[in-house]
Length: 195
Length: 251
Image (cartoon, rainbow over all chains, first blue to last red; front, side, top):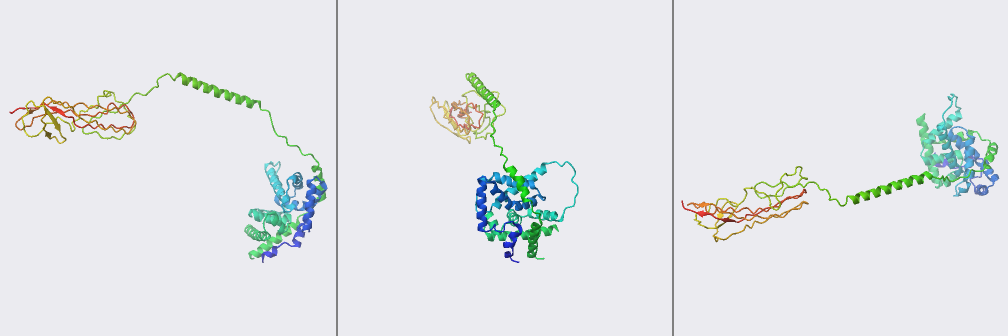
């Protein structure tokens, strides 16, 4: 197998993104226009951004927390709305900025849950296979180095193309391909150790 | 399974997981969010509480500081006219011994002060029997009648006769030792006593009596050494020239 097998393809992007044209110049221009309008206080433009990225943010939050949390997703977009004035277009996609906010929100939620004292015993419930798989992969990804973990999350959870991941991480596409390849092999080793 | 195949399997697992995650209800989520967007954000008001107690505490601290400084100045001025109390003088122990004194290493201040300090200016009390004059000369036998003899004795006890006039009174020329104070003590320059030896010897045939000039040693004295420092007195005196008054008489 070669690294080129993990090159971004239209099928990969469409599988995880609701906007198949996001990686193209027209999609970027459209997104920039929405962001500019939202910074001026246009809620409809921000609503369009929400509809475009809500699924990716929900996946990321679910992956980080291990459960679905609509409040956390809402908190991500609420912070984005309040912090739009500080947003600077550096060439990275808007989803990369949302990804950073989502990570902070997930950390805050985890910390808040740690501080909360349980009021009752948590009943033992069966974990559905999807959640078990999600937790297994989540634990394995958490053991990766930071850059490799970011590549995996941006690539598979947020649904970015390798070019967008490269723009978000301020590196070249070839470097992202190599990091993705190494991350997948490291993940395979970690998962094999667990089994 | 090779590592490449394992990586491919992980890739497929990730894609399958993402594909199977349920899609959120976007419209419901937006409807809930848009109500929060319209809420006014609470303004951030800088916290500026009046702190009257801070000024009070600072004022009290300043008053205590000033009062303490003033008290210290007053006490210092009151004690300024008094002579400074000095510790009791500790004198260096007198050197009683034979031979020229040498440097002694000083190790700290003396622990016991000497009860009888040497008289000032008297130099060291040397009862030494070192290389001093006064030893019986064993020179050739000569009658020394009324011969004021200036006996110069040597270290080896030999005597070199001198024929001086009777009224020749040589004062001892004992050199004051070179005081080498390595320490911080005030070393009083000692005075040499005059080597006024009085010849009391009686010559015999063997001439062993003449000129028993016992010149007092010019003992260079380091004087009272009140210092308690690390100075070492090395007042090494040369021999004084005594007046030989030996009378030779034939037995």
